[in-house]
Length: 226
Ligand SMILES: Cc1cc2nc3c(=O)[nH]c(=O)nc-3n(C[C@H](O)[C@H](O)[C@H](O)COP(=O)(O)O)c2cc1C
Image 1 (cartoon, protein in one colour):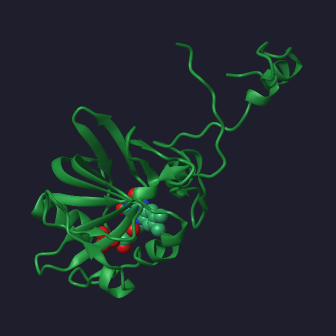
Image 2 (cartoon, rainbow, N blue to C red):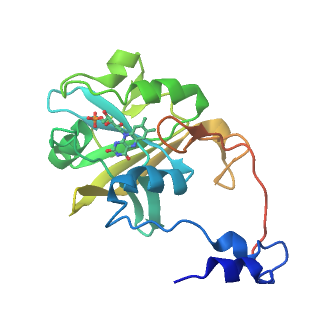
């Protein structure tokens, strides 16, 4: 048990610019117990900014499904590994993206910049599975090279993925994908060094619920010890 009064009276913790110990006294939440119903807003509010995968998948009728997922990241490069996590709908049925990746074994992660943000958000509406969000939004698609699922042509970058595995943890579903091809808009990559030009490539990030996002233009550099 922390004695808050004693902590408030204690000296600074000693690191230059560090807060005093008093500032470390805060609220403690039990996400598996008393505060379980706050787990979602607390976690998605704290773990920010999150990258956004605008995932295209193929329905069995050949239509292209597009939906955003911010439970998403890259987890390694050998092999190149990404994970996104489509939950279930309120009625307990899997979302279309989850259903499609399980059947087809593939998906494309389309990255999102500010010009695509509004269309990306609109595509998160619940539509019948056989309806195409890319058609609805008038978004042109381009063929992928290694998979049948097309990518969104206007995306600054797209990752063609084949499903490695799908892991269910409680009501969470993690889709692990191996990236087979990457497409990057010309101006976003140095063609010689093959490095991303971060001053040009500026994806948006997901912030707190319900509707907050951030830009990635405000950067600072902090070299690592070598
Ligand atoms: C920015 C953003 C991020 C989202 N991230 C997720 C997520 O990580 N997991 C999830 O299940 N739904 C997420 N959603 C909600 C889905 O996009 C939404 O349920 C969508 O209808 C799913 O479409 P689908 O049924 O075509 O797969 C997100 C929505 C937005 C706008």
